Image 1 (cartoon, rainbow, N blue to C red):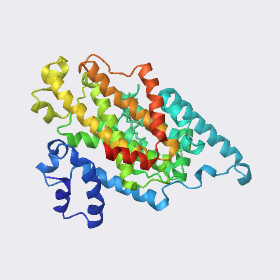
Image 2: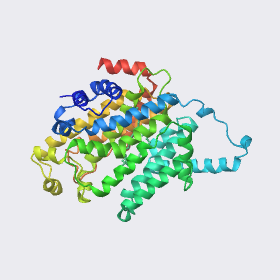
Image 3: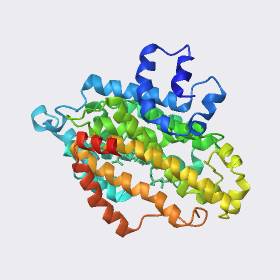
Image 4: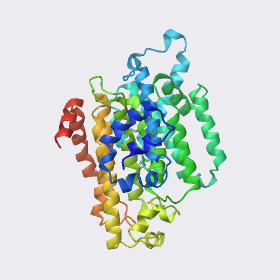
Length: 389
Ligand SMILES: CC(C)=CCC/C(C)=C/CC/C(C)=C/CC/C(C)=C/[C@@H]1[C@@H](COP(=O)(O)OP(=O)(O)O)[C@]1(C)CC/C=C(\C)CC/C=C(\C)CCC=C(C)C
Ligand SMILES: [Mn+2]
């Protein structure tokens, strides 16, 4: 059964949403085993997580369409002296510089990639990066044990304030400026905070559908936040929704990879993200994971999980070349680097209990020119190449 059928039987949805939804699923998700992707939707008449998330994708795409696919004029903005706000402008520039420093410290390769972007876009991506990093640190950082749902509510209040032009600190001020210039919606930001709430309250995921929603919250959202800033190539023939869909897929692929890399580490912190139903079907339990023995069953289970993560990467690859030229290289670089973590798990003979899969310096360096080469491909050429495969 395809998800299109599920939508037809859902009386609540209007025809427009249904029409926009169907083609994207037809191209993307149909290639996934239906038992894996639509399991919970099939079991209940409720909408699957994928369908719910796709509504957000459509909303974001519509917003960008309304305001123009390329953030026109943003790169040419001349601000400062002439409007009598030079000291505010200096402060804002300092705030963006600090965001750049944080980005350089936590994500060096990605930071280098952003240097290829236009100065305005690069600053905006840094500001988004820092907000995401700070949000993640709330539940993953050194003070994580003190974080309560109330603290996350306060963080969300700060978010709405900065979106309304009332930033609390300089990092918020940079993001506040960014969201005033680009068609960036608050929804993915709120959803990321929702993901952090899940991390506080939930330590097991029954189905892939549940896990998919978590991955959307903590990583798919990053893709949706980034596209309006990175911009879609003016000569791209792809629909705005399909580019957003690819961005979402990259976030999901990255997060699934992150989960597969960190199985042992997460289990020791009491968290098992792998779907319980799929583990049980493979004859595995939480105890097996805590015991941490690489058995035949484990290898075979991991092969399936890796295959699924790779499918999301493949989905994402279709969209990268549709981005504006200067944004493609950092995205290709991060995609290729993250995807190689899956190869590293295989090279470790699926021991993700006691070994951390990582991509060595030489491989990282070798990926950069490959990413550069791919980034040079024009949208249509890349599309043709994918069609030939
Ligand atoms: C070019 C590029 C990659 C841009 C994105 C920049 C950006 C705003 C990144 C924010 C990342 C962040 C701090 C997210 C917070 C939640 C989190 C930590 C998610 C995990 C990232 C990996 O981090 P790490 O390995 O350090 O994990 P640990 O904290 O150590 O566990 C995630 C796995 C997800 C990150 C998700 C992305 C980078 C999505 C990227 C998608 C796009 C940029 C869209 C590209 C567009 C198309 C059309 C494909
Ligand atoms: Mn994390």
